Length: 161
Image (cartoon, rainbow, N blue to C red; front, top):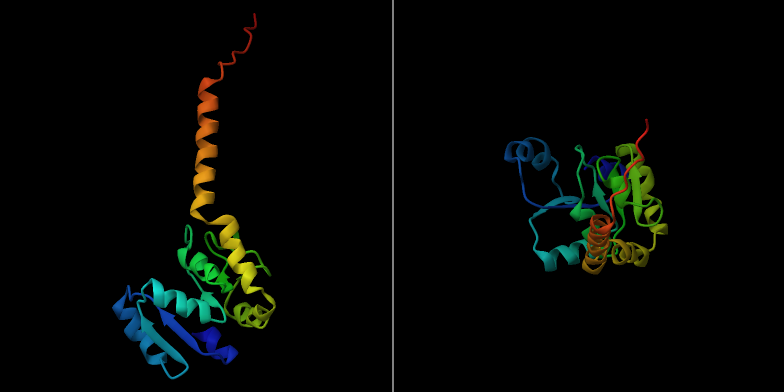
């Protein structure tokens, strides 16, 4: 919310409320015409919201192991701005599909750079790295490596006397 306010941009917040007390204390008082909570959205509405968004802001405060919402945004052609935590540096390629930032101030600065990112490039990232076909291909490759290692004769070091 702070990044959107500093940048003078509208913000839509979507998703489930996991901590009602936190929401009531910190989020609800900040809601206005420019900052709106739209609740949990299903796949069709999610694709519409993400596809029309200027960017997905992902200011996480924990080491997220993957980041489905980040990949979902990129699949919709939407660049991502995320804090440098968890898997974000592995998912986001600065300047290609978004930016990994160190805090709110840098997030605000990088919002100006989002216009230079190709929405087609964001989608291409997902097609190259995160499709079901890519996952199957990678699993098969790992399985073949395991099978090849099991078939290979054991190498024994010569005995020294």
